[in-house]
Image (tube, rainbow, N blue to C red; front, top):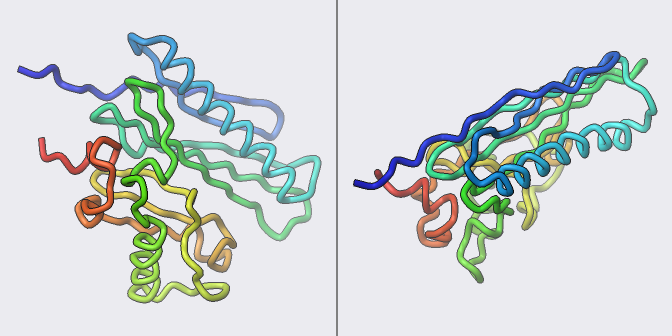
Length: 207
């Protein structure tokens, strides 16, 4: 009988200083401590990167408040997919800004997946995903800032249950009030182009 693949254990860490409270995940208890360290470092670096992006994008050197949080989207079958969000409000700005970045790992190897890694080499995944997103924009009547020109090859994504979720930053394709436009795509609709050995292949296996 095959050994069951269990979820990894997650510990919530906190960065706290005046006006700033950021919660972020770290994995604990992996038998391979090198893999654990690699994944945890990547997560921490992304948390720091979001903080830096807030200062750059809002053109300020101080914030009234900054709040960071995370969501675990997938934690099964050796795949860990998570989202980190950072909200910061600068004094006298009309409203705060929220940034979100997602990370997807193989917890056995420590590999971090980019969007291209989910698909077969040479498959035109950008065009295929762009068509699906365009269809959803039309069906859901999502208001855009301009013509939708397609996703980028390294578009933001996460994996949740049996879906690939493609998303865009605030202001990237939609007005602020729309929030983060998210486009869930069933892994089963991508079977022709997905990498069977990648995370989508793992999610598509019915066991």
